[in-house]
Image (cartoon, rainbow, N blue to C red; front, side, top):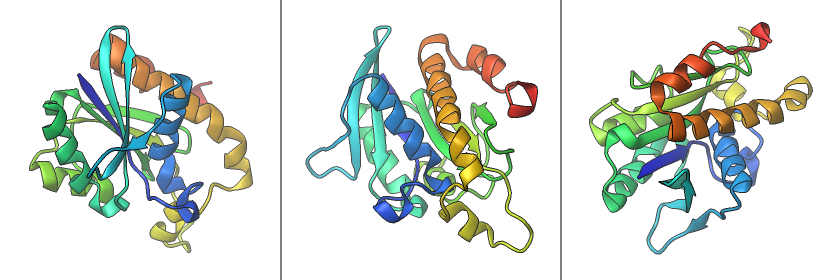
Length: 193
């Protein structure tokens, strides 16, 4: 069994923000496979189950704010008895050019507060993460304001395709494994196409 967690902030005010790229990818994955994310009893996440090539997968969208993501992820791992090697977290990344995907088997939070919360909660950074590049703001823009702001018009024209690519990457991770997926998706970027 695998657990896929999309990170973001709950609420309409943040729904189209760069920081919610993880939510967007998770929702697109759920829609593609016609499963509905629902809140379970005493759950701190919206979850859905799907079966992909005979692999049981739990999709989860934490209801906590980004900075408290770990408080939602750890109970899910415990509830479903899932090891860290079967966890994939999807999040935004300012250090990647807009639209670039990067899958990693582990690593530091890189300053991402959602990943930092998960690392602290699990006392480990030994889980996979898919980062979706949102690019860096201009020097005069506060990075926190930038990630909490909606995608601009030019980005909105491309974001659907980027999210579709992220969904394909997650499906590959589930069915083909980490190494093959990294080889196929980490090389891709807008400039390569």
